[in-house]
Amino acid sequence: MQRRSTRAFLSNAVDRKRIETILLHARQAPSGANLQPGFFHVLTGDALTHLTAALSQAVADKRKPVAQYSYFPPELSAVLKSRQHDAGFALYEALGIGRRDTKARREQFTRNYRFFDAPVGIVVTIDRDMGKGCFMDLGMALMNLFSSAQAQGLGTSGIGALANHADVVHEALSLPSDQLVVCGIALGFADEDHPVNTVRTAREPLELFTTFHGFE
Ligand SMILES: Cc1cc2nc3c(=O)[nH]c(=O)nc-3n(C[C@H](O)[C@H](O)[C@H](O)COP(=O)(O)O)c2cc1C
View: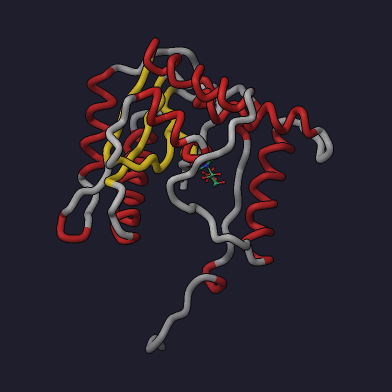
């Protein structure tokens, strides 16, 4: 209940041992047949700068997005659209960015490709031919990663936007061709004073997403 996405970080480095612990916790997640799908490519310093520079250049060049899997359904239903809208509204309101300020909105979006200036960026990949169930397993590992980081006083944010430029990530990290870029993760100590970190998202009430059968 305390975890939330962190989109502004202090420049303090994160100790490698601490990252290793977080990744071991991530990997402790259950998975179908214990396949343990997914790989974590952990970047900091020059390695992270190299990737973010390549991504920022791709965005500046308006390079055509190349995603290797579909994250969202082709058409969002009204319910999904409203959830997406509320999350976006909370984000831009916290930053004081108006509805029509497309320049400021674009700038915030490009911060995805700098891992929100976190000291550590993680690129998450999975074997290209894995099925939907394996994506579910990897999701559980990601949740463990977020929770473990939280327990150690570190902030995180998933960065699905990274997958929009999977080709750039492949090139910058020389990833093997059998890997598919799933998402990025920003990791570091949260800048608690930054307005973007005051964003709070809501969840719908239990009865809207649950049915109980056979109870009193
Ligand atoms: C896999 C994944 C990808 C995400 N991608 C992005 C992203 O590209 N940009 C962003 O600002 N937030 C991203 N988020 C954060 C979600 O917007 C956020 O989790 C959601 O709005 C709920 O807010 P909360 O994390 O603060 O509870 C991502 C989250 C996950 C789990």
